[in-house]
Length: 117
Image 1 (cartoon, rainbow, N blue to C red):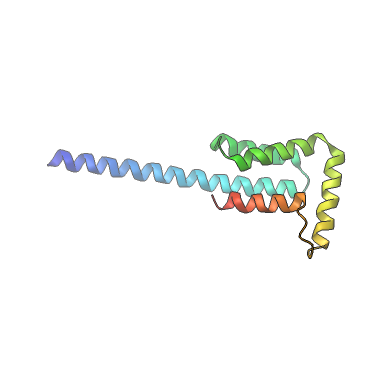
Image 2 (cartoon, rainbow, N blue to C red):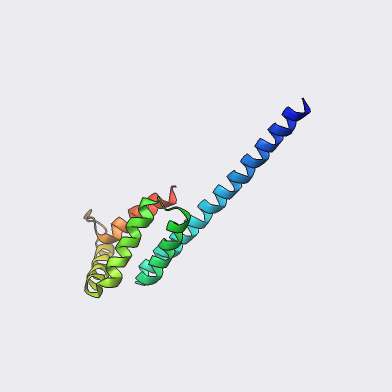
């Protein structure tokens, strides 16, 4: 009987430890995603890529992080596209009534998805 109780206690303790580790990892991922989105909003695409890299290190299967990393990589490589996107974002924010999907709205919807994980 004592062996069963000790085994059950060990299983519960291990489960608690794994749950705490999982929750800490998710909190780090959410923090890194906020930092990445902030860097993107400021046009610091190389810095944003670094934050997305950190997320992908913790969660390699995160499709949103991979998509955002690729997006930042394209923008960092192509300054003309970056300028066009920033102009599109500012124009889109001044025309809130239109429902046209811009790169900014894609980022906003992606950020909403990453926050719900």
